[in-house]
Every structure is written in structure tokens, then in C-alpha cells.
Image 1 (spheres, rainbow, N blue to C red):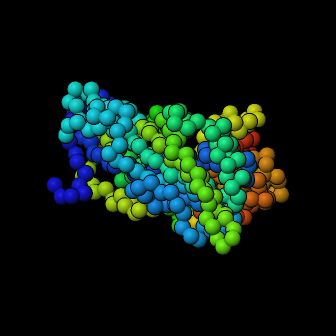
Image 2: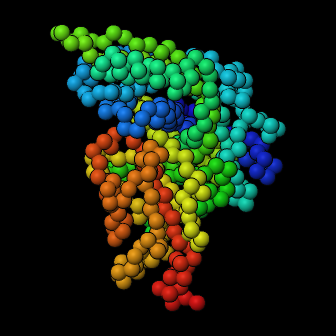
Image 3: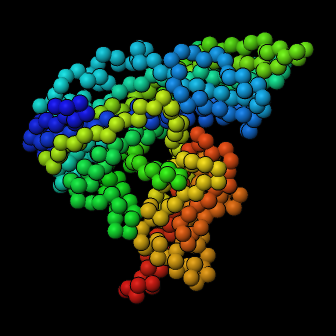
Length: 422
């Protein structure tokens, strides 16, 4: 077997109790690191007063040792400054270390069906299932805060000690997204006979099928003007968190003036993550997984946590879909035509043609790092071309979430009227 070939076995599987083939595909550790650093960045900043930091910087390169200082160009940036740098130690001890629950202990999936794989997706009718190997990840974040004056520095050292706990473990809860390799998505699509993109160029039918057979929500991510589209498994996570090594310095003396007073500390995070995905189906074919992202750059990916109930939808309305995305440049645009179906498109065209208000049909909400943005101020929506145009300059490292709600009862009535149905 050549390097890069996916392993394929004849093994026992519980889809229907008969021998069945499977392939193994890796998730993305880099994306998981991005989830974690974006979450802890957002959590820490929210400890402080709103809009407190004038400069926020996420070091996108993984460090191999603790960072205590910032580059000299930081001296010219507006303060207070918040800087965070991710660090990974693969040798650090972790909960359940050495057990088969989080580490692969043999070369074979159990022929008794009693494996350590976690259930994810199953369609007994199509005789296809997906499971995954649980991993336990340890990650660090080195944080540097920079203030103009000694008194401000001391004030916020005291503030931090009261706002949260240091040297005492605590659990933080959130949701992460586990990357689903394109090969996995393609194989599912080919096995069940449902194209990822339908004749209208939308993912609606495929995502609806996936979510109807999955134990976790499957999410779809758009990526700015590059048009990069990715699928993820959205899952709850408890992060074993420890803040420690809180320190402060005497600042930098520049001539007769002392400034750039730093506060530093480290955050240790430990949480369950995903290793290999195992797709079980007799339709499996030997394929090669494309190269994993091996860049030293980590892109923080914040996973929004919003329940359907939080949208406060009126009777007759329902959440149609939600996607997340990141922007590639200032005042970027996102095209959303592929995530809405033909019925909604026809209804939108009907409303525009007859100068009818769209708010009776569709509601689109955008959140940035979990905070609601405002249409007209932060973005505009071009419904004729299905484009959202953003009014922003600080686009880097932020994750946006879009929630599309539809007045289902009204849409069904309107479609009958448009197409002359009874």
C-alpha cells in the first residue's frame, strides 16, 4: 500500500449485522485548534468591559514555547492591547491517556462490533454508517495585555483576579465543528445517490438528508470570495480550563517616559476532539485523502452557540438553515444562493417583482463571534442576486454565522399561487 492510501478492511459492522467494508479519513487538527483559540479569545475578551481593547491580535502561528513578549511594532498600536498566541504540546499528559477510548490500540476495527468508535451517522436502508475515533487534545494560549500606565496595569491585574479564577481548574462549555473531509462527503453522496449540489446549485437536499440521519448537526461553511465550501460535524464540548502564571512587569522606558506595561498569563485547555472518521459501506472504493493543511498558520474559527428558541420566531416561521463563514478582505461579499431552494428563490422574485416587503417571507440574521450585527449598518442584503455586502475593515480572524428563517405557512400558500397549484 502506498503512502497516502486509505485503509480498507472487510469487518463486522452493526448497520445490519453483516460483514461490510470501511475506509478511514482524517479530520483536521488545525481546524480544532482554530476552534479552541477563537473560543478562548472571545471568552477572555468578554471578561472585560465592552469595546475595552483598542487593538486585538491573534498570533496565527503555532508556538513551541511560552511567549512572554510582543514584537516592537506593538509599541505604536493603540492601547489597551490584547494579544493571544496558541501553543500545542503533544506530549502533555491528559485525561484517559493510554486507554482505547482516546487512543487507537490495534490495527483492526473490532470484529465483535464492540469497538471504541463513537456513533455519528447511520442509514440502515442504504447500509451506510459513519463513526469516529475520539481523541483528547491539550492546547495552550499565551495571553499578553499591554497598558499605557502602571496604575491601569495594576487595576486590571486586580480586575482579572476577581473576574475569573487562577490556578483552579474549571469547565467551560461551548460547541466546536469537526471538519469532514471532501472525500468523505463525496463518498456519502455517491453511495446514497444524492448529489452534494442539486440541479439548482444548492446543498439543501444533501444537507437535509445528512441531518436526518446524523446524531449531530451537519453544518455548511462558506468562505468569502474564494468560494471555499466545507462541511462540519457540530458537537458540544466541555473544555477543562486552567488559567495560571499571572505576571506583570515594570514597563518599557522610552527616554524619560515609561509605558507598555504588560500583564501575561497562560490558559491550558483540554477537551475531546476527533481523529479518524470511519465510513462503513460496501460501496466503499479505495481512494486517496488529499493532503491535510500542514501550514504553520492557524485560522481561528469561532463556533457560534445559538438555539432555535433564541431566534424568538413567530407562529408559522421556522429556521430554514444556518451557515458560518469568514471574510477574505475588507467590505467582502458572501453569496448565499446555494443554501436556499428553488421555492424560496421564486417567492423572493415574486415579492421583488410586485414590490412586496420581504420581511413577510424571509428573515436573515448575521452574528459576528456570537454578537448580533445590524442590517443597514454592518451589512446590506441584495436579494435579487443573493449577495450580502459587509461594511467592515476589521475582517481578519472573525467568524460570522448566518441564520435564515422562513415563514413556512406563508411560503407554502404563495408557491401554490405562483405555480397555480391546488
